[in-house]
Length: 211
Image 1 (tube, rainbow, N blue to C red):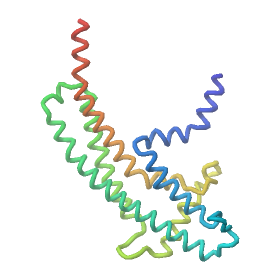
Image 2 (cartoon, one colour):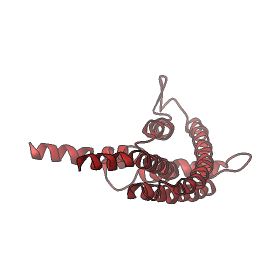
Image 3 (spheres, one colour):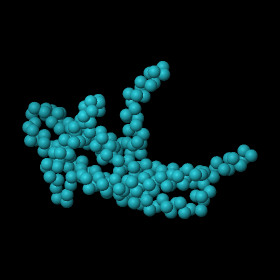
Image 4 (cartoon, rainbow, N blue to C red):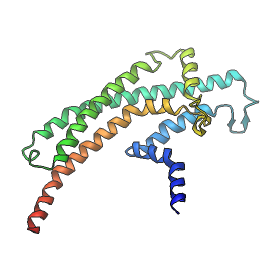
């Protein structure tokens, strides 16, 4: 029985780790990133009865460029959102540390607030970095940059693992999701700090009754 449980855990460890790291926004990750990348990789394979042989290489390339451009613009807008929202969190949390009851609250409240500040700052920096690295300009994205991005995004991990044959570069996807993931953790830490401040006194009251 124990061996069966260990085998199941090892088999599903990557998926469990993904769900753990992205628990605040897993549905958005699946819909806006994983499915979008899979759609780029599936171009020309099956599309409403049109097989790969019936689509020319030029048609497949153009379709991939269109989908890749939409995906890049979405990730850039997502980076801008993370920077703005991260700045709001970064500016708001220090005011919570100035509350009169925070010093007397449980130590986890201050720890979570400080963690939220650090995570929000890291989210802002990574979001700005992603915005600068992704190929884009105000008018249009060059075809060469789009082709390079599609190749990098759909080439797999090239390490012989089962994930490397799925048509998705998981390392690149993780890097693209890093700003939003860190921002989500910053929000979770902020909410956790608020809960610690609000419900912390209840523990003291219970200990008082126990005496």
